[in-house]
Image (cartoon, rainbow, N blue to C red; front, side, top):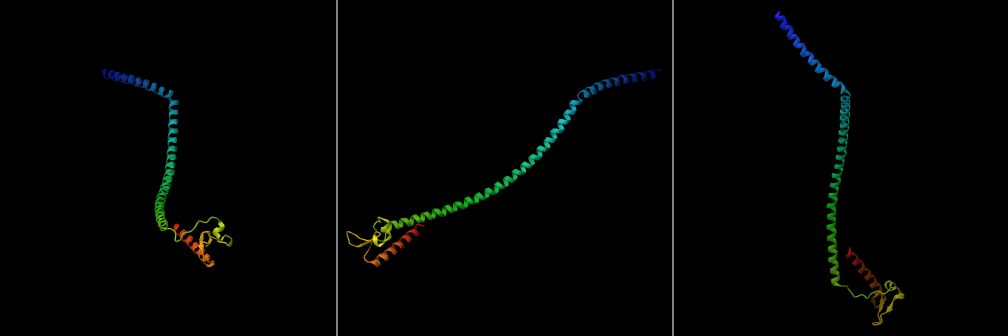
Length: 175
């Protein structure tokens, strides 16, 4: 009997421990049931946050693709602008050289002076060389047409064409 009494006491102790554990477990389950709504809300909020994060990732990928496209276009434009700047610099250098040459030629023609002295033209009719504009120079008695001197009618035609030639040469030197 002592053996059966020892077994009954062991079972009783195990039963008390099991009942104690069941009570603790029941309290924890009660607390869990009370917070069940809050847990469900937390799970829903977590799912929504995950969904928004996935959408944001997709938008970020789309934005980075658009930005990469813009960067590629900008690099192409940068290369084009660099090329145009180089070409512009070369053109500016050529223009500057042309201006220097033109100035040197202009200074050379200024230093040599005119081929023959020419009196200034006072009116437009003097410059045309018409018969009405011809007059005798008061000091010398020589016919004056447009500020240049001529002895005869033939000289008048030659001088006019020579003046035209001089004008054309001067214009060419300016270019």
